[in-house]
Length: 178
Image 1 (cartoon, helix red, strand yellow):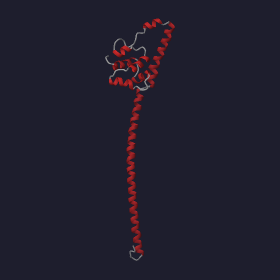
Image 2 (cartoon, helix red, strand yellow):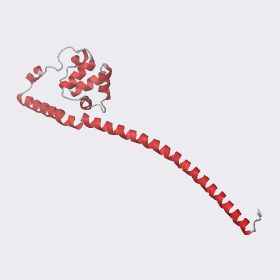
Image 3 (cartoon, one colour):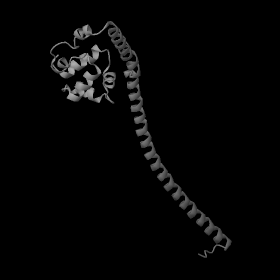
Image 4 (tube, one colour):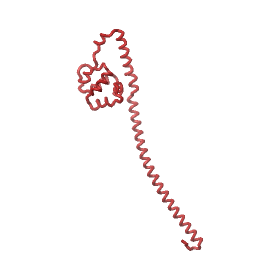
């Protein structure tokens, strides 16, 4: 691996996480930083690198930066210094942490549900745009109907006046007094 992005993808896969759960686990409120590094094949910033290594101390920072060495630090020397009880506690914590990361976090951040939610939002956005167009069309139709109503009212008035004049003429013996 020769790029930060490729090594980052390899690390995420090795940790059995998806990009979003990895980013959240590292302490990013949104996964955009991690997605950006991967998508743009860009270098990791010091801040991003520190967040990753703080959350995953077993990750070899030199490997992540340069590709040299192993992905994970060999913690054998540190383990030799621990007592049996401390090793047991450490193992229990690591197992619990791995269990949480591998079961709970991926379920909370399921990509299929996020993709479905994005699709629903896209559909709703489309419906909203259609609704706005329909609303504009309805306003135009309302104006047209109002004009037609006014014209009909004028025609009815004119016809009523004609009928009244005709009736007056008839009542006046054929003489138009107007």
